[in-house]
Image 1 (cartoon, rainbow, N blue to C red):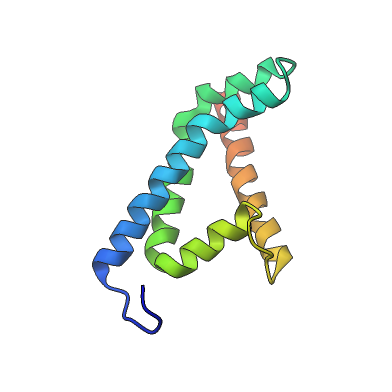
Image 2: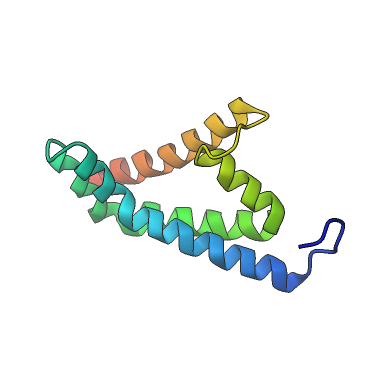
Length: 115
């Protein structure tokens, strides 16, 4: 995208859809990746798949909303900061975003155990 080019509605919708698909992929692969990294010692991590419909849905909706609101370039910058491929200017903001994501997962697991 050219600098100073207007962000169209189509750009925002496409960015939102790609963001939601990436969130879905992370939601599906995240617990399995942790299980592999823990070399089988974290069998309890697989229980997160039982609550996937709650926390996965929340992450997908949040990713869609943020992708639509930020647009292509700012969403790309956000993803680079979250995954450590760029040095964030505000490290506390990156930590806060990761804390919110983790809180969504923990609260949905806790909520599913109550029901």
